[in-house]
Each structure stands twice: as C-alpha cells, then as structure tokens.
Image 1 (cartoon, rainbow, N blue to C red):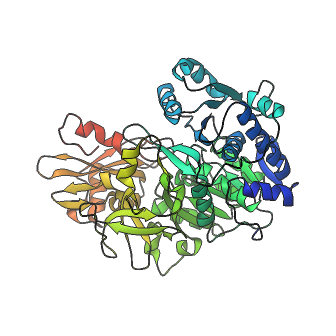
Image 2: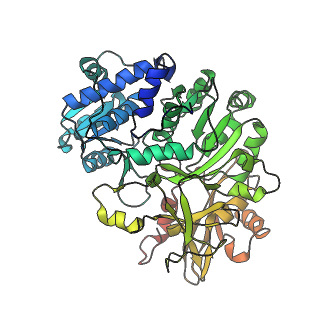
Length: 524
C-alpha cells in the first residue's frame, strides 16, 4: 500500500488499485459486491452517464438516499468531470430537501426509491433539476441509475479538471438558520485522507465498515480510507444494530461511529458485546463521549484500539485525534476528556474572541485552525465565508476550548453556547462530565436559562438509565461535591430523551428555546 503513488485527483487511487489488484474486493453492500476492477469500470461508466446527461466542469449533481455505494461512485465520477456531488440529508422534510437541492444548483438528481414520493411532491419546485434517476437498494429492475450506467461508455478524467475543483457540497448540520453548503475541493478531501490516516493503518485481511451517513463527513470522508489503501469496504444502508452486526460478521473490523452506538451495544447484552469485540479499531466522534461510557467500553473491549476524533465539515472531518495509547495512558487520565492533538497538516491556536489575540497555553478561547483540508467556502455565501476564514487562512471554528502544555486540545463548548452567569464564564462540558458520572444519569445537556439577577444561570436536562431514579435536589447536590457553586445547576429537568439532530448531536437550541422565547436578548 505504501508503494502507491501519492494521489492528486480523487480517482487516482481507484485507478491504481484497479490496475494492481483488480480482483480484490472493493465494496460490498447488502447482497452485492464489486472488485476494484469492477468498481473502477462502474465509476468510469458513471462519469460517462453524467457527461451524456450534460454534466460538465463546474456543475453540481445531487444524491438523496440512505447509504448506497452509488453515492460514492457519483462523487468520484463527478470529480473526473470537474463537477461536485451535493449529498442531501435524507432525513430532512420536503421543504428542507427543496431548499438544499435548489441552493446547490444541482442539474441532475439521483434519488432512492424510498425517497421518490417526496421528490414527486416537490418536483415542480426544483426548476434547475433537468434529470432525475431512481436508484434501488439492490439494483432491481427499473433502477434508472443502473440503466444509465449500463448504457454509458467508460470515459477517462477530463484533462481540464484540476485538484482545486469542488467535488463535494456538504450541508452543515447547523442548529440555527438554513444549513450552508460547504464546498470541498479534491485537494482538500485528499489532504484529509492522508492527514487523518496518520497513526493507524489497515493490516492484510482487514475490512473497513462504512456505517455513518454519507450526507455527513463522518461517512463521505471516512469511506475514502478503504479506497485509498486498497482494502475492502463493507457499507451498511443503516447504522442500526442488525446492520452493524452483519457487517462485522462479513469481516469488517475497522470503523467510525458516534458514541451513542457504543451505549446501545453495551446495553444489548453479552452476545453483542462479544461480537463487537472483533473490532480492531473503533474510531468515534461527532459528539462527546461521556467518561463512564468510554471507561465501560474500554473495559469491555480491552483489545480494541479506540481513537477519538474532533473536527468539522468545513475541514473535511478530522482535525485532531486522541490515539489508542492516550486512551490507556494511566499517567495522564485527564487526556481522556481531550480531543487529542492536531493531525499532520493542521495548525491550531486559541484566540480571544473579543480581541482576536492568541491566548497563552492553558487559557480558554475560540479554537482556530489552518489546514489544506479547509473548505473553499460556503456555496453562494461569500459574506458568511468571510466571517469564518481570515485573510491569512485561519478558520474560526466557533468552538471554545484550550490547548495544554502537551499540545492536547480540549473542546469545551460552542462559542454561542458558553454560559455567562454574573460575569463568570461557565463551560457546559465540565458540568456534563460531572453529572455523567452519577449512576442514574444516562445522558445530560447543560444549558443557560435567563435569570433576572445573574443574566443567566445553569440548568441541567438529563435522561436517566432504565430502572434508576434521581431527584433534582440529589443531582444538584452531586454537582456541589465536585464543582464551584456558581457552576452547579440551579435547576434540573428530567426527560425521557434528549433532542438530537440527524448526526446525533444534542440540540441545545431546542432545549433553550422555551426559556428564551419572547425575550429581547437571547443566546439561542
């Protein structure tokens, strides 16, 4: 694998493995599988089909379905033409899908059979879409995507294409306002594959499980690792327990998943825990991992390498990583709550958001990054792009945190989520980590709610483990054992489930909204 030439274009590594190992399995999905040679042919036919449909350099196509290898084929094929694939969140409502497709400017849309009724309802509201192909999970009769590939000729990359052409438009899962289309170039996506791959590699016989949604960088960027290294990938249509178990039974032993999956597995019983013990690498991110859950997982799977990653769509995904040795470093247990150190090619500094001056090591501020992985910008939103990318190339993440003297990054809150009570800055993860240790607490979110005296005060919203009980007073007293008084919740709401967005992040905005509604000043 290390002898393969460094890629410049997104199709370089697929081309290489199709020549060197054409008969090695490349991708399996449900009951179908393809070798590198077969998949290379499909991608070249896909490029031919797109060109026949009038797609060229600078154009955008869109994909709307659950996880499907066709989405990845379209991304690489679009890259060969200098076009971009806008991967649309299939969980959106019709009006939201309408917005994303129109905002992207897509002229061709591939839509899964399950989503086709939604598109039929809004088809008249998609004036820019000239061609719609239906794709089925199993390539069944009537699959227009398969028909288009079958009728198309294989073509090579357009010689006019450059590595700086946009290849992906990923819609950010923001919790306020309309989502923004993040423009990712071939150069940035390849830089991410190289940088985020640092510190771990596939062994002979390994298989890569792709289970995160492809509309999220955790799916679309992660799938590139298997293609880059020439190892088989097992893609699941859904990230449910049965699908994940099926992928492991097919030999998948490396994966990236959100922490919530770990909790589900640990609660599923000894058979599930034993099965997931087959994983060599469990990479997790997209939302914080509660310490009790992480400790339980490491105890349950002592032979599994855990890697935490932190990043954003705007930098193609991973920007920092906490590696396996750090997870089990008895001399530095405090690093378990860090996001690790920057991956190669990523610079990090902490900046005072008020003065825009870099702060000393160990002090809190906004996390800024500079990296070749950085997006080109937000589609059709130059003003919004200018707000987050400085003239000298630094990206303002909007996340608050610090860097310690060992270079470990601690992500402590969103800039807009920081609670300021009586002039004191309060970082919700610090309180969340304490409450998560309570045996009755399954999940917790800390928010700021209005207070006439202090401006805002701390509120905890928690869900409890099945069979456990806890009172508001008990949970507040528990915090007082470990935290300064001003940091402790003044009230606690106990709920059945915490609201989440499609990528699993807790929607603190939804939790805050009832308390700030009707006020002139709001931190929602």
